[in-house]
Amino acid sequence: MTALGELMELDDRTVLVLGQELDLAHERPDVANALAHRAGDTLVLVDTGVGRAFRAALRTAADRVGPWSRALVLTTHGHLDHVGNNDLADELGVPAEHYVPARDLDQMRDPKSYWARAFQRIAWAAPLPAPALAAQVVSLFAPMRPFAAATRTYEQRPLERIRVGALRFTGWTFADGAVRVLRSQGHCAGHVIVHLRDSGVLHLSDEGNGACGAMADADQLKIQTVLGAVAGLFEQEEATILTDGHTFSVRRGTDAVSHLDGLLAQAAALHDAALGLTGGSGQIRPSAFTSRYAEAIAGLGVAGANPNPLFTAMMALNQLGELGLRPEDGRTEGLRPEPADDADAPWSRPPLRPSAAPDTAS
Image (cartoon, rainbow, N blue to C red; front, side, top):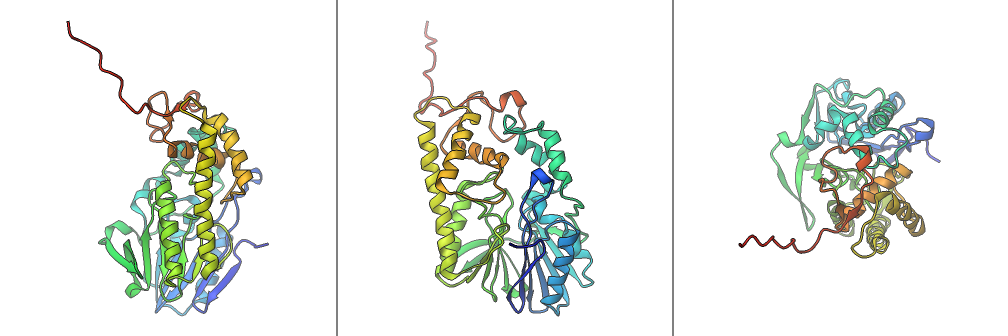
């Protein structure tokens, strides 16, 4: 059993700071794991969690990997549990840089709207109207300080082509190449992963949260692509230690490859199960599909961060989209909030051929 803020020493210059799981019933926020690492004379913090207790633990970890004379704070993505102490970049007493993904800026500025959109999609499963539920959830993550005076976006730097072993990525490098920020953009629109070259650490953050991404801006293909690429890095021994945002464990070598392969196998198994649940080309309501999809998840032993009915319903909608189903009312699902009455409207597969044009000949 781990405790919030517990420190796990990975080597003499790298410490993993453990967070905690979400518990909505007891109004307890989840807190993402973070890393403190020293690259030369630079302190590198990967994510900052949320809350005063975690902030104190992060400072302790930073002191443990010292000494350092400059700081680099890297945000993997804009979700609340990763960004609450980002202003720490301004309080370290040394020259500091802080980078965030540009595509996540909107949700960092206005998290209530981001989460209201997420909950509106599953209004039939939510205990409160989406705006009220979003406000309640966001209020758990206080104090929330996602920006610092040092904050810039990664995209303000020139995009680099980064080769790691036989694999090629795009992203950004820091500390003379010892820190590699690799674009992944699967779990949410702006997501990045971080490779600490000299320690062999690959921080997957939330790309490994489960076999199916839950958020409205998740991209299932990108999730699966990055899982496969990271497994390749471990097989080539370009990475030796796998950490992530929420499993509170460290995986090394072949254990990391097995874990990543297991996630990919679960994704394929869920796809097959969902295909069976939707049957042919008829209608299906999201609420009915979600109920059966939850049974399939349990039967397959699929796990993930923050398992609860809300996230299961969000995954279910994404799974329907992966199967090629679309809402029948013509809306572009997930791109704008919809009235609660429309959230459980039937989905079906669009026809493969366009309807015949009416004969207008006289």
